[in-house]
Amino acid sequence: MGRSGVVEFAKETFKVCLKAARERSVFYCIEPLSHTWTNFINTVAEATQLVKEVRHPNFKMVFDCRSASVQEKSVSEALLWALESGYLRHIHVNDINGRGPGFGETDFVPILRC
Image (cartoon, rainbow, N blue to C red):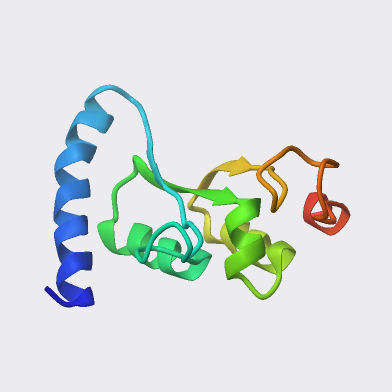
């Protein structure tokens, strides 16, 4: 199955799960993860596109600073894009080393200014 087939299968699967999410008033959030962890939905752009295509009010996205540090050209620009999309529901504020802010090398000042 090619990439487009995988995306279509994922959309169908999410749509089935989202019926239950809506009934229970919960959100399912897709999280773009680094290519070192997965080969599916690695960037904010990919997550935004998937949420847009699924078109369900209970399907949103998570922004992960650690993955964005690896995947995106600019973490703060990627976060702004996620915010402006209207699809962002949750943010993981974690350092590139997996620990909390201040326990690694990530500069959180520009990120938190978003």
